[in-house]
Amino acid sequence: MGTIFNIVILGVIVWFFYQRFLPVKGIKNINAAELKAELNNKGNKQFIDVRTPNEYRGNHIKDFKNIPLSELGKRAQELSKDKEVIVICQSGMRSMNASKALKKLGFKVTNVKGGMSSWS
Figure 1: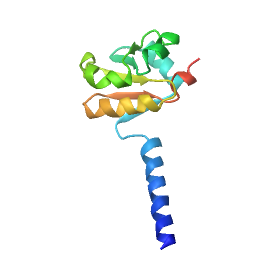
Figure 2: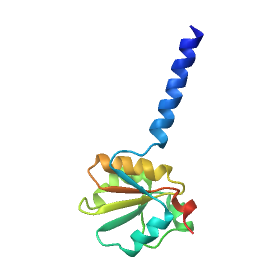
Figure 3: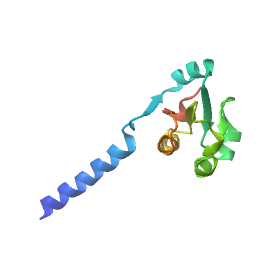
Figure 4: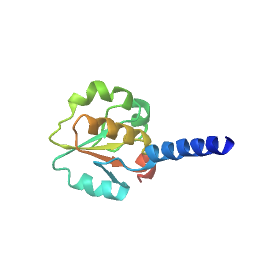
């Protein structure tokens, strides 16, 4: 009985990490160096920073508009579905959650892995 319980617990832990850390189908991931290239080729792109307003005021990238993750559902209509959305946060976790939400709403989304922590 204990062995079955351990297997179930292990399965839940593996599933949790799988859901949290593996890339989501349809969401492109880029690093800070790739983001610099995207900023030089803005074309058909829009950039959002999903950190809190205080975090954003403390340090942000010029071309990014601040739409906090907590407001994204209400403010998604400010974004165009005709343009790719590039999303950043502090570490990449909130931006991945935002990317998933935007993907479900029909946006083409790119997440910045490592977020502002990887930006220099």
